[in-house]
Length: 140
Image (cartoon, rainbow, N blue to C red; front, side, top):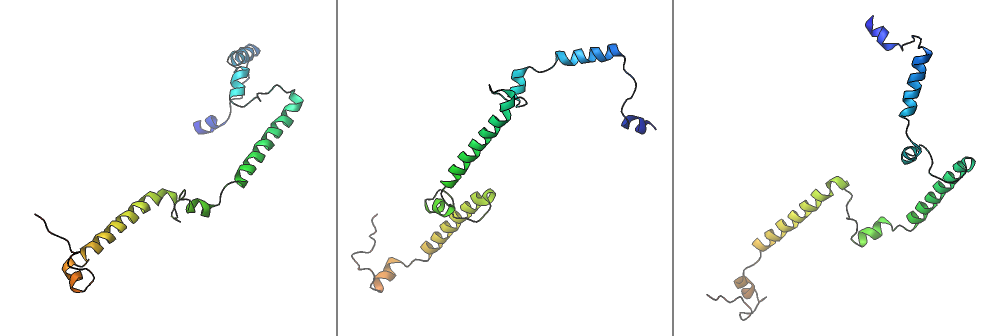
């Protein structure tokens, strides 16, 4: 029963004095014009009210035209990749950093693997790739 009464609005009559006091209280706390303009409730313009809508629409159209012009001059993705502005990746931007780290570690592992299996200078001299005068000299 209490749930039903709380879901319905209060329809009890208000005395004219209470109504006037409530209205006066609300009018005292009413935001000023500057605050309404700051919150974009009122338009901040010097134009007559009858022209404000048209001025607002013209400003929106100017902004739209400016954006279209800027987007028309925007370079294609391929050009940005070619100039190393964008990464050449199809991965989601959130994981591109991890992808870059992984590629770096994979290159390092590949280089370490190649260095570990490179032929010794003596073998290169035996195969005639290096001359004995070009071999590494040990000092120490």
